[in-house]
Length: 85
Ligand SMILES: [Zn+2]
Image (cartoon, rainbow, N blue to C red; front, side, top):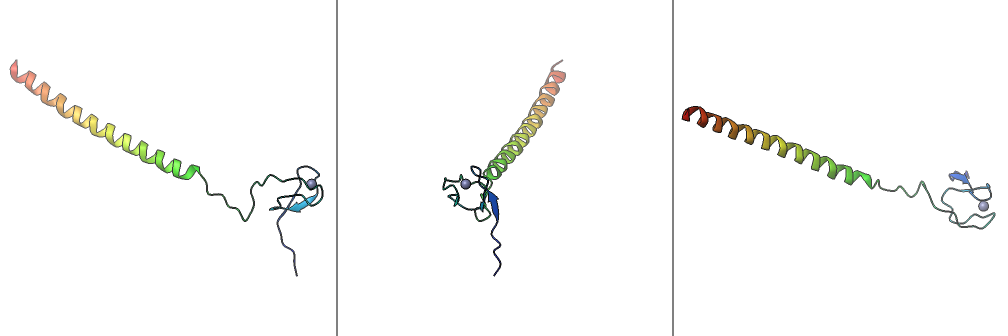
């Protein structure tokens, strides 16, 4: 039987403990649970990045559309100006 638990060192006493240990078995202090292999935290920035990308894309599309609209109106008004003079 092979013990293949991931280990790390206790931040307080530097003894080797299990990576997912909540309490050090040597000094019996609470271990702040950081990156455990069983606890794969979902990256919280991913949906944020996605939303930002959508927002930037939407803004770019909107500004592009507005610019085209404004050019259209500019052309129309210059055309009217030319016709008047
Ligand atoms: Zn310890």
